[in-house]
Length: 101
Image 1 (tube, one colour):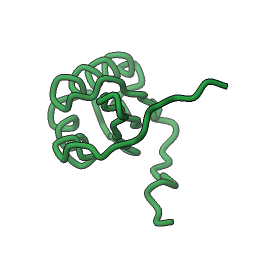
Image 2 (cartoon, rainbow, N blue to C red):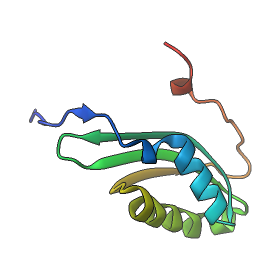
Image 3 (cartoon, rainbow, N blue to C red):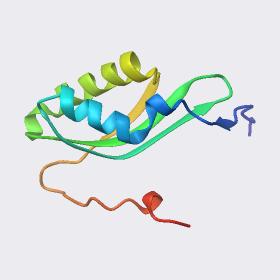
């Protein structure tokens, strides 16, 4: 198995999960909710993120994801984001990573 030379680094506070959530909700009318936001940077200098989005209408999911990707890159310098869609039928807002140790 090949080894990756990447290590995780701290991120700029402008890309803090709270700032990302507030910005996306304020700028994307078709977006109902954002959750499970995790941002990190690897030694290559690339900033990555994972997050969940819930469109107001399931038919808007593709548009919402594309807009979120664009805003993450332009506003926060996040080059790659993995975005999960929380469909209207599933509303589980619990993230095990948000719980202490």
